[in-house]
Each structure stands twice: as structure tokens, then as C-alpha cells.
Image 1 (cartoon, rainbow, N blue to C red):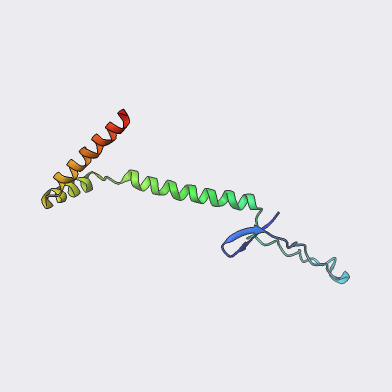
Image 2: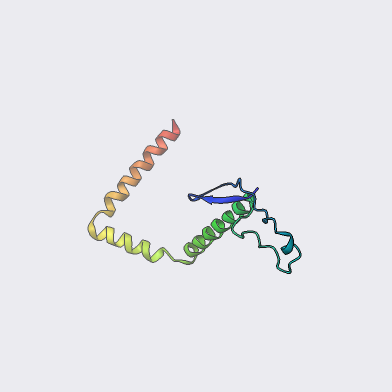
Length: 107
């Protein structure tokens, strides 16, 4: 079954792309029949191709994250929070929420 693009989605095409019948005088012409439209692939192939493109984009994002060193950013953020005086309260809040989680797990 062939698919066609309709409003951003794919749906099975109800159209048949058969070559038009030729008049008898053109039947033995040296011209080849027109090629089938390249944009139309079987639905499963279009889906597989879209999945491969998405997978490779995801891999590219992961590779960028893997190559970047976040350690300087983390130190700069912690230093900035400490300079503002908000690092201490955040640490205490994290400790208290961790203590509450442990108490709930013990029950």
C-alpha cells in the first residue's frame, strides 16, 4: 500500500498510480514510461526511515552531552549560590526532604 502526505500525517493512498494507456501509435515508442513518484514509499518504509532519522538525531544529542564538561558549570553555579547566600538553605532543604523520604520508606 502506498502512503501520501496529508496535513502533516500519512494515510494510505486510495489512488492507483498506473501509467496512462497510450494510443496505438505511441505504444512502440522509444520513450520509457514516466517513473513512479519517488516521494511515495510503502508506509512501513517511511515509518522505518523516520525512526532511523529520529534515532540518529537522538544519538547526536547524546554525543554532544557526552563531549561537554559540565564540571566548570557546576562549580560556577555553586559559587554563585554561595555568594548570594542561598546555598545553605538549599542544602538544608535537600537534607530535610531526604530525611522525610527515608522515614516514609521505613514505614
